[in-house]
Image (cartoon, rainbow, N blue to C red; front, side, top):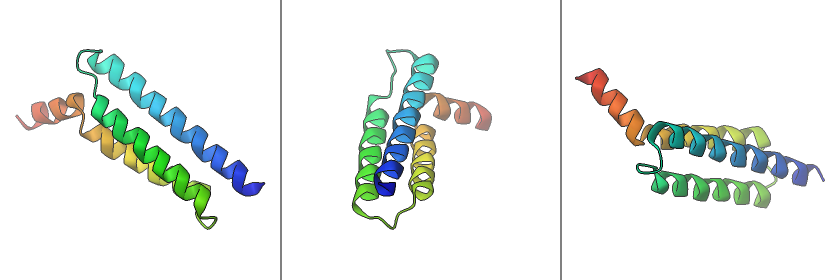
Length: 91
């Protein structure tokens, strides 16, 4: 029961993080420049972390949440608004 509950908690965090990423990117770029590739990578990474958490009981929920949070930050660094902001800071 504890394993199932922690997997559900990790799944809820991943779904909410992906939804927040989608909303932020939509408001920043609109639908014309929406990063569908990064969103797909985020979804596949979330599914991978959920399956690893479900398969291996020694992975703590906090570890899985932390790994996905870092993965989300890494994916969001390679989107157009962030790259444009870094480009304007360097120039």
